[in-house]
Length: 419
Image 1 (cartoon, one colour):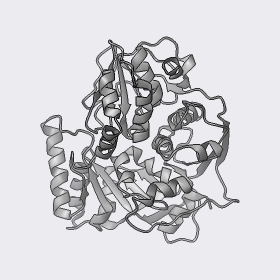
Image 2 (tube, helix red, strand yellow):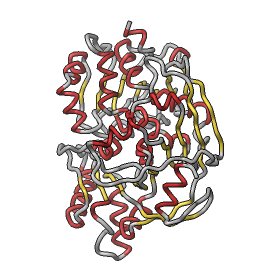
Image 3 (cartoon, rainbow, N blue to C red):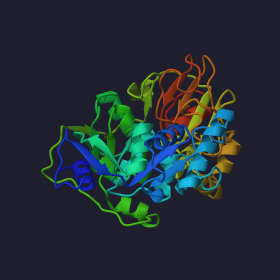
């Protein structure tokens, strides 16, 4: 079996599973946020049970509309907070080492290799970077899992993606995943698991792997997984809260498809408006002036991402006609960035540094675009109207490209400002 099949078989108490098979499987962690929790709580009440199956395995993170932007979002957060207090579930309050859920959970050691994790958020697939099977589900399915401790799903086929060659100076996980989605399309991995392997993947940092796993869903995937190696073990060594199992794909495992890429010489990638699949090398973007640059989110809000942006912005100024917004992924990332002098670099460059929030990524608050404006963003989606006006445009890129573009005032390669 491959990695996905081994994890699912173990959680369904089966010796083997195969693609297309429907299974009932135990879950190790359930996630909800301030957008999806109210629906899950309502449906949980309708089931008629008084207690969740295990409060230690349910985590609630207010991150989308927080700090609360209006009365409705405040009521949503209040409802989640009160349910967490009643049930004894894990709850991360704003300001108290909280943050964006998909950066926070790995940081806190709440998701580990070999686990089955479900969340009422499509980017729950992020945790596959640690060799887990994690996927997003609807709020009703999440309510049932909170009551029973298990979930049903169809075992997905697995696509093996092999990346050969060496990573360029400014090329990382965001570039690899945009390149991939650009080639297979937004339905190229529909209801499949993506298994990322190859020497370029081995060279990739854990942060870069989180970025790739996070955007697997943008190719239509159910999950995106990486094998557990020394980098993974080092990352979780100081974070793990309990024992875990490591699974490996068998050498004779079967795959629905095997796709190979030689990424030697790859340029940083940019996804043009309308779709993450509309990706191309930065040199082919053309002369595109921008009004805003966003650096952060559950895709690229980790410390390494901020370090990359600071490397570009140090000693430079954000273009006078550009707003540059920096969103650390968690309070811990914010604190680390502060201690390393990154926040000072951002502020001296003319960037605004915000509390951790999903606000601008989904067009909720703290970075909305007006009609006719263009934004270069390290977030994961650029659909029409995603970040505000349907007559605005969003371009997706790595932190390095976003920072360089903020300085120049148009979309450029980091090489243009780094010397």
